[in-house]
Image (cartoon, rainbow, N blue to C red):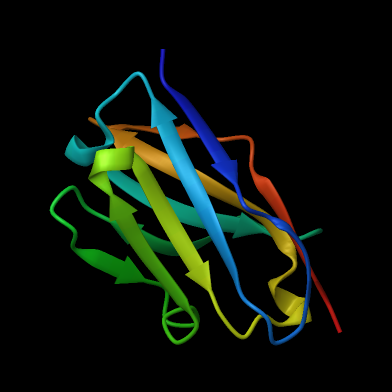
Length: 115
């Protein structure tokens, strides 16, 4: 059974940084693509970034300047570095792991940015 667990969220002041982590158990993460999404209150879930098993990255246009996705295959972990955070970045951040044609999702981690 695949489990995806996000961590690293919290309350932070505007302008500061956070790094989110995503660990996927029961699989070798290095062989699968991972991605980050977020969902703000009252809004649809939106794509932030993804990274393939070979390290190729893709970003939503609005995210590429401040957010960086990376992976550490030795730790079975995908990261999302978020810089210069803004109050509008407040959302639940979700990690997904693509195995075959199926996405496996974590429960999300809350990020709250105060002004």
